Image 1 (cartoon, rainbow, N blue to C red):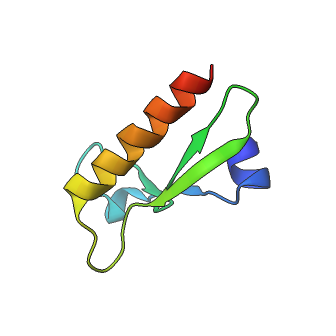
Image 2: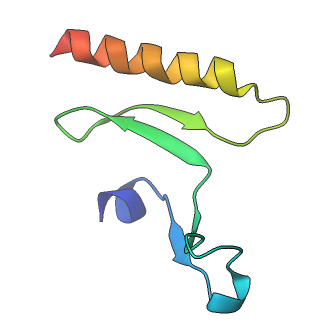
Length: 72
């Protein structure tokens, strides 16, 4: 409920005809959201964008997780 109602993130089931593999079951949001233990959104990351460099995004996500862990 938090993902869809509060954050506006979606996942829609694909029909069997739309699936490219047996594991291709859903269309997902292109955002990754980092939440803290109190269910507050702390950061969000867009997983698909022009000029996106995955290695940089990965570093940013891992750094944000480390910062959040230090707060605990």
